Image (cartoon, rainbow, N blue to C red; front, side, top):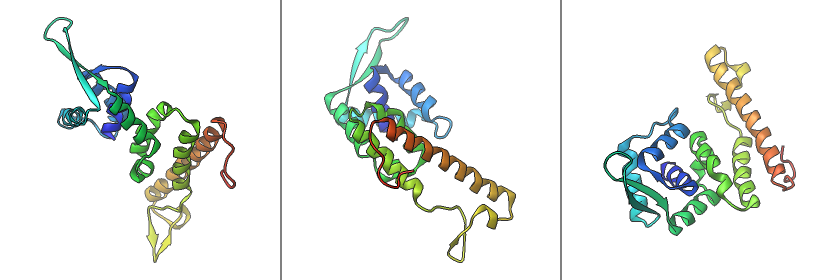
Amino acid sequence: MLALAILGFLHEEPLHGYELKERIKALTGHVRAVSDGALYPAIARLEAAGQLERRVEPGVAAAPRQTLSLTEAGEAELQRRLREPSEVDITDRNRYFTVLAFLRHLPSPAAQAEVLRRRLAFLDAPATFFTRGGRRLTSADVPDPFRKGMIEVARATRDAERAWLTRTITELGLLPEPGLR
């Protein structure tokens, strides 16, 4: 998730490390705060892989600043990650939102729609927080108002996301597959 966010933001424009951290924090900080101890080693790994380059620029009022930008290899890696997100990038909401934040950088509407279809298929799979005797429990089966709330909020969120996915796939100019809701 962190590497994708770094590649995605640097695809948009070269940034200083602090600016990059602030953008990532705005995207994911409410869920997973990004620390310097995670960000800068990730930047170093991407740089060592030839996906980022560092350029020294004069500082505004003090020391020189280092600007990060994407290389051709970094652009290729961004495209690969967007075109072929891992299973956890589809099933984990926070990781999926990071994919979604940069999916517009994937130039093919068909490839964009394929990623959205994978998320839709995940949402269509039966899921629940609670089971009893191997049976999925619905909100009607759960007397605890807090667990009932978890189930009801998850269902409403899933239904809203399904509607958005279906509409967006259609807006990309691609006819929905049979049974696509």
